[in-house]
Length: 282
Ligand code: P6P
Image (tube, rainbow, N blue to C red; front, side, top):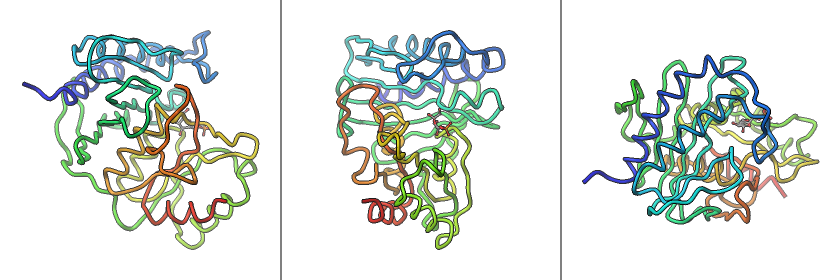
């Protein structure tokens, strides 16, 4: 009897090869916008449709929710899947990294972080990899021809941080956050790694150690990234690898969205960097 959570990740890995295969021919913008008001690429729509079909075909899946759709699609299974089908799709035009983010909950979203059973992401880079956090372990796989091969069976955040990357424009950053960035650059002397796709930037943090964030902004305190589709899964993965997360005050997995597409400031990385951030942000 195969593990239902691994069956979901194997299905996503299989579908990701299909998604990777069409990226070259679906770089145009569609007329539509997602529930967050962002214009959709043909690739966003295709990835979402393929993942919905593949995931809901599994008996164990009880619902599918996506950053690209307003409502949750319900079915009869036990596991509830949330998905950012093509994270960082604006990088398609510039041919930079993108990803697919998956969260698996034991209740229908909007769901609390405590209900998260497992999380993972696919990174479409020079090679395609999948990272999953299951039962307290983070595993990295090579994904080729729809199948997975283990590359690292116990991914842990390196103790000494090396890289950082923060979204938004510096003049939009609140003063206390700008002060923290100064510390990152002057005291910690981390190297800037910000590429416009969270999955690719977080994979740098997971590989080299450091911090990634999209901060609260002066005119947009709720910030940009979605708690359910981006915050919970990524925070769960980084915490499972020995790191930590925060919205500036509390860990992202301790938050419960009141609505499906709710946004949140988001920071993930080495625990000392997260701790210093929380003590800096009022
Ligand atoms: P900006 C991609 O649109 C995304 O949701 C994340 O993957 C990424 O980190 C961020 O937004 C990029 O936002 O404002 O730098 O383009």
